[in-house]
Each structure stands twice: as C-alpha cells, then as structure tokens.
Length: 162
Image (tube, rainbow, N blue to C red; front, side):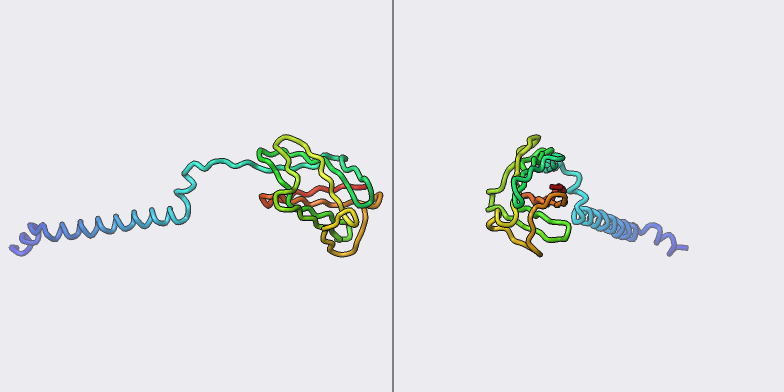
C-alpha cells in the first residue's frame, strides 16, 4: 500500500501532465489564428474603403448614323465613378469586327450620372482601326453590336440597328 500512497502524493507527475496539456492548447489556438489569417478571414473583418462603380448604359434609339462608317450614340454613366473608354469593338452579324484603341488616357470620359455623345467609327472613317474578318459598312436594316472597354477593364455591350 505504501507505493500507492507515494504515487498519490507525487505532485511532479501532475505538473508534467498539466504542462503538456497547456502546450497542446497553445499550439491549437496558434494554428487556428495562422489559418484564419492566411485564408483572409481576419481581413474580411476589417473595414475597406468603397471605390466607385462603373455602370454604362446605352440610351435606346440614340444611335445616329452620319454615314456608312460613323455612328454616334448617347451613353449614360449610372455609376459613382468617372468612366474612361480605352477600346471599342463594333461587330456585325457575321462576326466581322472593327477595334479601335484610344491613346492612353485620351478616350472619352463620362462623369457619374451624366450622358456623353460618343462617335464610333469603322472602315475608312477610322484610320487606326483593326479589322478582324471582312470589311463592312453600316447598312440599313442590319444590327450591330458595340463592346466598350473602360480603363478599369470593365466591359459594356449594346446593340444598335441602322
């Protein structure tokens, strides 16, 4: 019986077990914190400043064709940030397209909650356009798709019929 009493009175064994248990708890908590930080969980709890949004909208039936190679359309910016166009594509129903790249920062800029008149040229009216497919002109009764790309790399599309 004496050895059992000696084991019960030995406090060193209990201290070792508690120390090991405490170390396991510390490692688990540290691992959870590192995992949360690495997955961005903590980053979602921080306040992020809001940036302006772009939202371009074609004013229906505003496409005015000056010729077979030029069309002017009114574009609304319904967003909260200035929008600058950098590229546009004009595509016909057969998949042929003209692409025009504005010089850096030289494209039309539309302020929030305003409209702007933008001219889209193709063919001979557009000296630096890139043609993909066969050449074409705006023909009465046909539909064309215009894709606009902004400086924030957002894309906006509308269709117009001559």
